[in-house]
Image 1 (tube, rainbow, N blue to C red):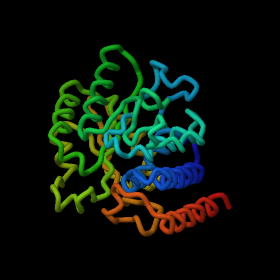
Image 2 (cartoon, rainbow, N blue to C red):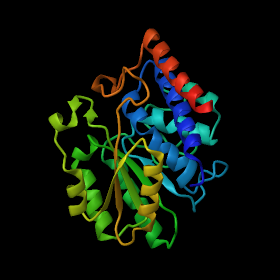
Image 3 (cartoon, one colour):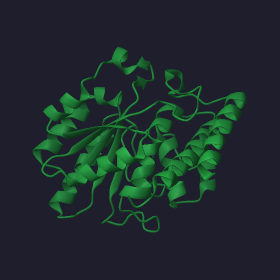
Image 4 (cartoon, one colour):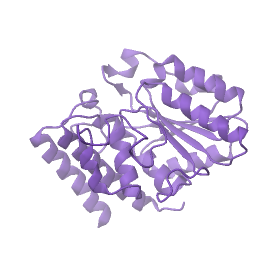
Amino acid sequence: MKTDKKTLALTAAKARLLAVQMVYEAASGHPGGSLSCLDVLTALYFDEMKIDPANPRDPERDRFVMSKGHCSPAVYPTLALRGFFPVEELKMFRRIDGHMSGHVEMKHVPGVDMSTGSLGQGISTAVGMALAGKLGNKDYRVYSVLGDGEVAEGQVWEAFMAANKYHLDNLCAIVDVNGLQIDGKTCDVMPTEPLDDKFRSFGAHVITIDGHDFDAITAAFAEAKATKGQPTVILAKTVKGKGVSFMENNAGWHGKAPNDEQFAQAKAELEAAIAALEG
């Protein structure tokens, strides 16, 4: 492990605070699903992926696609903390005069490899990137995070049929299995389980982990890298709204900004978590 677990946890906690602050200041955004996947993103950007913030378009770099593109409050703070741009630029999130759209955007934000928003299209793009790597004899890897609500989109399964056909072992998809989506529990809105059997039937190597356990996350990435001849899907069990007590496991926080009082409480909780990790 290139980065120790405590450092990863501290970085994720700082990213969560930035994410909630962005949504609060913009009075708009998607905090719940952003907070749930931030441990996975932190492990990717600070431990796993071959990237260079000074050269974000390096053709040899690993790629990342946030398929659930509304979770930009997870991506932008991670990129800022990794050094792709100053943290101060996060204040431009969702501003009419800003350059950081509510859905991840590649034209104006360094480090974003694909603009996404329409659910299902991100993983399809990731499959295309992985196929291009194979055809070009490149050794880069492609990672993509999907929501467990997103996988109800038929395009997701078409993408995995192609990934299986072309033996894209350079593709690693992570499904953020937090059990909730905008309208409630995923099992009620559109049941998708058993996800492990479904993805295996589409030719993927499947790993199920606790998506907040850095040892499990990094071990899963190592297993994915060692898997040959087929793509890997990591089913990361997570808590929507992770790190903020009143947001956790609450579908109402899928796409809502906290008010002044709620932000003060969230800020206090996240600052306490940061202080505990720094102690």
